[in-house]
Length: 495
Image (tube, rainbow, N blue to C red):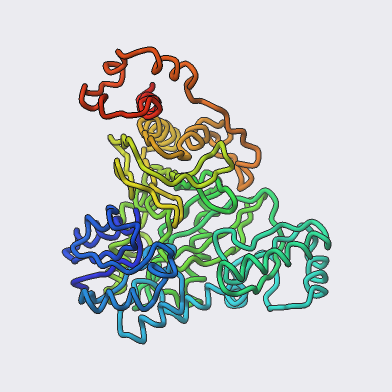
């Protein structure tokens, strides 16, 4: 087993890995950029090393600086978390060359599944159902047009090396396809350094369901059931749950078996996710492989009682899986919501800045994976996700009610967040019924559920006896220089 692990990441996922290391008796090493000097992951780690400027390519994406931190710290493995270098096969190969264990799949496997065209070619050798689509590269628009006509419009353009919705466009006609290819190539080149794109049949009214797998270095592969990830914005997931309300027992069994077959044929090792689309007739199709721990892994941990990060570390150190497939069962229901520092009322623009006031939810069945604290400054340089709120209950209805309660308790003042959106999703009848698709937010109207700010402004302007209402001490009130800070405090403590 490893004695010291360097975590090549930041924020809540770095904290999550640090906690797993601590419970396993492993020292955790953090790295940080200029703007992350005061971050929680730096404070919680056993050691921390500065690796450069705020720009990711000068710090968290810089191979040399990460490797140098490993050498200085004496760490004997690297955990990449998710994002940044987690799915970079070149970095995994560099670790292999340096003799540093990479807690994830081998670079060869990562390169295979990271290239969606190659992955489709390989998975096509199994009996796993696949969405009709291109399996070869092309630069000729005539070939794209011919293939689109063959499978029928609408079609979905995707970046071969892509993820997170980058380079993705739906086309309903040849004219739209041409524009989609031009835009997709530019975006793919900018995001991934590779402008290869391909098309596949666009599944209408789909649901996005993924299966968690674990595979060791001794030929053992198991799945830990599914997660429903259909509530998305710009192809980014924002609400996940397990079990999926869309699956019956037979479909769940077949999807799990298909995921294990796919993991085996790509020679997968460590934790990963096999993603599927489910059509309106409940038929499922292979979508892609995510070669890392997922943002939404906690919902699987809560319904199976298994610690996925600890298993990642154990597998990478050479240990065998100690569980058989029949040992894994789903218990109860779990829902995760992602909280972003974004302004829902302004087209979800990023909202970096100082967290002036923070109240975190707690109580039975509640887990909060967070990377912020009161008086922490959220930087503009990185993904705006600031926390993940996960709840568990014995059934789905109880889980929704618990999530509603937790969201009501959650207060973040000083920056705009998506908490209002998440509250309203939990109240939506389509979500409550479990009958929703990836188009959920396209038919969703965000309404204003905040208190009347004009009334609060008037109160703040004329009243000097407001302290008891916000339960602040005299000294604390005197320290508030702006009436708008006082207003924000009241907003946080309303209800």
